Image (cartoon, rainbow, N blue to C red; front, side):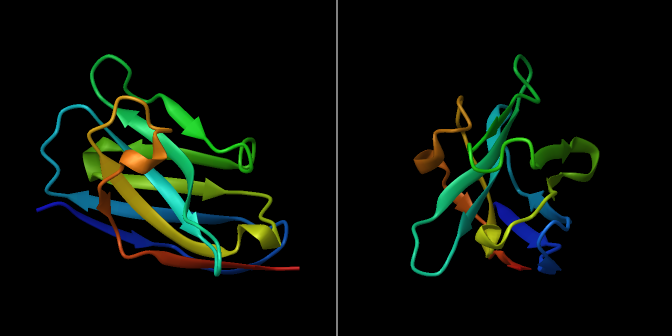
Length: 126
């Protein structure tokens, strides 16, 4: 059974930084994507960043336009841990952030992720 457990959320002032972590277990695919999504109150869930885990294209990253240049996704395979480094945070980044995984080839196929964590809250104040 796939389990994804996020941590690292919190409250920060605009311009600050946070790093989210997601520990994954039970995933048996050899080639797949892991990523981060967010959902603000009253808004739809949106894909933020994804990274491909595989033999031929491993490490390829994908980002939503709204976070390019500010957020960095990375994976520590030895620790089965996914990270999202968030810099230059803005109040509009406030949301519940979710870790997700799926047997995808293109990690910005945001609707195709099918395993989800419980989420961690990020609040950015102005």
